[in-house]
Image (cartoon, rainbow, N blue to C red; front, side):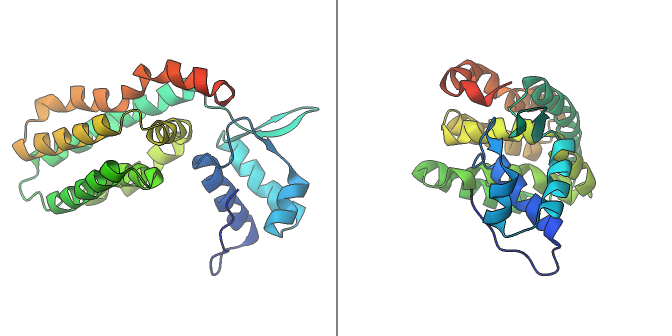
Length: 226
């Protein structure tokens, strides 16, 4: 587990929550891995009370599950939760792209193009696949931010914890890096052309491409999935 420094004015509970969630989302704490309170308390240098408060929050977010007589564990990737996240994200992403197609100024294009240039470099050298995943998220966030839909993006992120772990696994396995990059460029071209008729199908294809590889992931990482 990677330990980060406590931020200025960050209380202990928030610090524990941030560190644990980051490690869960980065797959440093693997799906199905046991959460040992005494060990975490020692590693993080914190008391048990704020640790338990942070764990309760992660349980509410379905990132940790508790089994009576067994203990607490990082939740396994639940494909039902993944599908629900895709359902919501598909609706929101389609609408935000329609807004982008209709926008006359399109001042966001420079930011999208810079992001894609970084994605190309990262994909070509393949050294930091976590960075590619972050750039992928940033590509989509640029439009939500531009159209003042930051809270919508936050809501999507809260719903997408299981989906995002699957997406990260996909990035680390380098299963669909080229496909993801190609689809991002297609999204950019659709925005430039203003052809909103292509948006819905393009978004659906982009968000569900993992389905072609899910059997491979479940065979290679059987303990990661519910």
